[in-house]
Amino acid sequence: MTDTSLQQKRKLYKKNEVITEQGELTFDWYVLISGRVGVFRGETKLNEFSERGMIFGELSGLLARPRTATMKALEDSEVMVVESSIDEVIRNHPDIANKILLNLAERLAKTTDELWAVIDDKEKK
Image 1: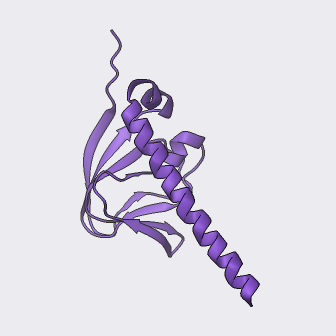
Image 2 (image 1 turned 45 degrees about the vertical axis):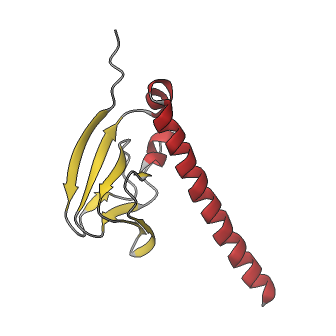
């Protein structure tokens, strides 16, 4: 019988501690248990989230490419670090795969709305 459990561990991050760094080539992904996490490119904060169960850092695993942003704890935060390939998640944990897909779709919709707002603003000028 094959072990289909996700390799995971809880980790505490202090306020301002980096969870993952832009440019790193790592494939872990994360689930927020408590606290607040910011998404940064350089010194610019692009986004933040505090919703329990929020999945983040999954793009590197999906695309097998370096991290596109730095994730930093904005306050003391607890996260679940998951060490599992997306193929394993899809095969053995479809409920989690579904949550990842919904999360990505919501972020894409938000980014698309923001892009259209910038385009509309430029056209008005």
